[in-house]
Image (cartoon, rainbow over all chains, first blue to last red; front, top):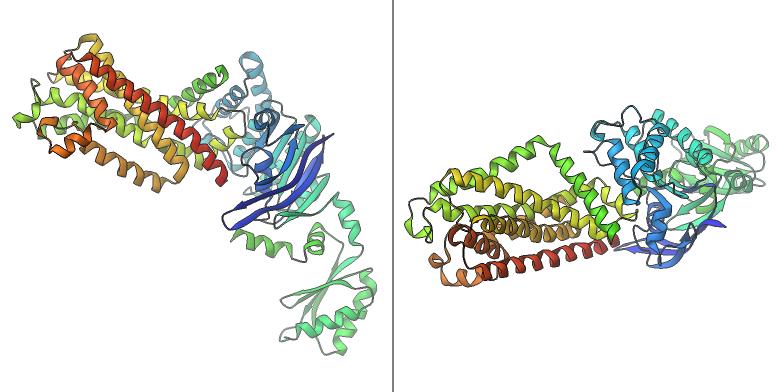
Length: 321
Length: 257
């Protein structure tokens, strides 16, 4: 059985179509990544599945319960760790966890023991009785995860678990999530706009762009589907005939996904080592001096480019503004 | 239902505990009502007609200040909700099976408890300044009930507004916009007999004035228990209505996120 099924979720805020028919499904026990740039609709999708907000249309089940018809049943089976920390700053880690447990109708000794266990699990046992105001970003984040786990949910939503963390804390969080995926029999849905994060943590990913899922699969599958390598050519200074240079690239045998950005030309070729001399000599012949050229094995970045026709990093910046 | 009441209880514990960790807030909570009572008490102490039949102006004023303090406290109570929204604590509760009503009720009761503590403080200070509670034990109880219900009625409204506007600046504007006019269209500072006619009429529809009338009956006359009970019932109804309104406002908030 699938732990999460989202079908044709749509939601519109005043001027923005945040979800434009999002569909995907997550198998029980897997770590699934929703990958996309800022503003793609990942958080809205998660908030809809976590019953925090209602989609305008579409349907979804989480842990076997209908999100729209039985939101309270869903709530007792999920842990939701929002992008922004939900820690009560004035309370200690222990108090935060006890209250969350009580909201889930836990009580007494079982609750106390569960709280101790979680404090240990996320490495906050020593800071457990200090007020959370003084915690570092990484500590607050780990407390957030513990809060999401207190009632032993079967599905855990992690919305941008490492955004805003420094590289060290991020690496620690990755290990944390990997450990969770093994220790607790949990289905984890995480959203991220870090390609390497999805690549590392998620068994399967769905790439989200402008409110829809453009492709779904394991990172390996998605990259294998691209077949070939990405060649990036940077033209030398003072060259403004990008369009003409692109024309040259399209003639190269086997080149696909030809695109440009600034003075950068990109093309996907079956074999980089063979294609580079051909590309270089063709460009030189037509009078386009080349500044640099690189090839790369496909990354999720390329997958994104391939399926959306847009560059991930620049889309991410746009979404922020 | 029982689960919702349990949740309310634990959320009240959370709020009182968090407040107890704010020493500045505690000092303000104690000092501010005292300043009001002493300042206004002095300002109008020589104006005879303002006593409204009391032995001294301070005796007339004390129940008024208690109510003013309660409804101001209630009006500002929504700031706690803004804080919880900003810190995303509310989202965390909403994605868990927390009763929406429990979230509101806990805040409303917290405002009521604060108001009762301040009322106690003011009455004790009043005793030292010569105020006598002519209604006896029942009189004290009525004053506390009036303070609590008044704070709760306005806390409900304040939380509804907080969920609708969701920013501190708008919340401050709304609290001032509602609070100050209601204070002056009431008999907090002066008896109804000295008011311009239209204000006297308007004050009858002002929930703040319901509380003031009840508390003042209890302190000054220790009589009119029937009308006093009526005022308290009206306040109870107002508290219920505003709390339900605030609970309903979660819909608007959840649509916006």
